[in-house]
Amino acid sequence: FETMTPPLRAAEQGQAPRAIHNMIAGERVEGIATFTKISPVDGSVVAEVHEAGTEQVDRAVAAARAAFDGPWGRMTVAERARLLRGVADAIDRRADELVSAEVGDTGKPETLARDLDVARAAANFRSFADTVSTAGLDSFLTELPDGRRALNYAVRKPLGVVAVIVPWNLPLLLLTWKLAPALATGNTVVIKPSEETPSSATLLAEILAEAGVPAGVVNVVHGFGADSAGEALTTHPGIDGVTFTGESSTGSAIMRAVAPRVRPVSFELGGKNAALVFADADLDAAVAGLARSTYLNTGQVCLCTERIYVQRAVFDDVAAGLAEHAARLRLGRPEQPATTTGPLISQAHRDKVLSYFDLAVAEGATVLAGGGIPTLGDGLDGGSWIEPTLWTGLDNSHRTVREEVFGPVAALIPFDTEEEAIALANDTDYGLAAVTWTTDLTRGHRVAQQMRTGMSWVNTWYLRDLRSPFGGVGLSGIGREGGHHSLEFYTEPTNVCVQL
Ligand code: NAD
Image (tube, rainbow, N blue to C red; front, side):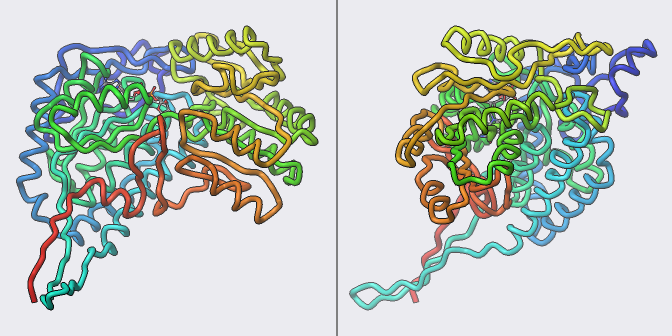
């Protein structure tokens, strides 16, 4: 992995783009081909990435198996926890490089990469070092009707070689959210980062090696999904489990891929998340919160709000306030401190988001803010920029209110009663997150508990305790991550029963 050079400067200086290799058993490994990673900020070339074929994936899985069977598998929990804390410290030390890797691939504001992605990456390692150090075992003193007595207790054992497949929106954060508990519990891994964000995972592999994680424990293969490294990994017979974050349809494909060998899966998938704003809400706080939950990371967070149900008495005020917030967002170069909003990840993703902008108009939407491609000048117009957008005039029957857009856009829809609001929010095939805005304490609890989602916030959004369960229902996923929930996925219990 070569030192990060900001993409524009490399192009300006006429340098060849840097190469990103697969990382297998501690070595940089070439692929069967290379593909070009393009900057979403200005369309410049970020890197040439080595795509792993089946041979490289085989080598990565074999390296992970060998490492699992080696000293790593015999390390004590305390030794592994110490190592994870060392990784967190190394992430802090090399934060600037990680920020630059993340920003180069995604175009997100540097402040966001630093405060969210990289800070959380370190926090993930510390949190799971703590969780694994303090976890207890299930145990039962058993008394049978015939008088026999026994002690039952379950020991946890790692799954083995885990495939970690992650998306591009919060690449380092989502990767470390899986990697930290996988390593804490003694697994070895093969990571397949998104083809859109190869840089931070590759740099992290280097940081892990420096922090003392043995070669082969963490391997990185690059490439695409179907007919590429992703599929080669999920269909590989040497994989003992798959942890995946990404689109619901990809989750289905991975489930089919592992079905013949019946491997455990943990899926964090898409969302079409609702916010409910009651007339008794603190409207300034609600509007500011909605602006954040709709537009953070250019709407490319799985938890982002895309449906906003507002009680009729305050509908116009919320609509006007949120449209004003959307218009105030500053699109610009990631390194400029005033920038609030980056581009979408790619031209292909922008085409998808724009197709929903067109569809919304065809479905009868009124566009209160945005709705198209901005003209930014300053060399940015080769990037995949999009305007923060807001719609009214749609309802739950429209595709734009049912399908995940994954961009900076939400539909505002009025409601009259609490029951109606709950029914509208739950009327979706997804079920990841919801937000309720109200100053009525009991209503907040009552409504939040009735959301058919894995996460339900009241008067806030994306406030996370890493020990709490994270995941979705319906199309939004299978299983929960966080604290002991992660420990359960990454381990298999063996129950021991001793007659007393
Ligand atoms: P994606 O499903 O297209 O890709 C995710 C990863 O899967 C990539 O590494 C990709 O190469 C790989 N992949 C694709 N097809 C594959 C296949 N057939 N076999 C194996 N691997 C395959 O998702 P994306 O576009 O990168 O990310 C955006 C999506 O992720 C959105 O739907 C978003 O809601 C979801 N997401 C969910 C969460 C969550 O925690 N629930 C978090 C972030 C993103």
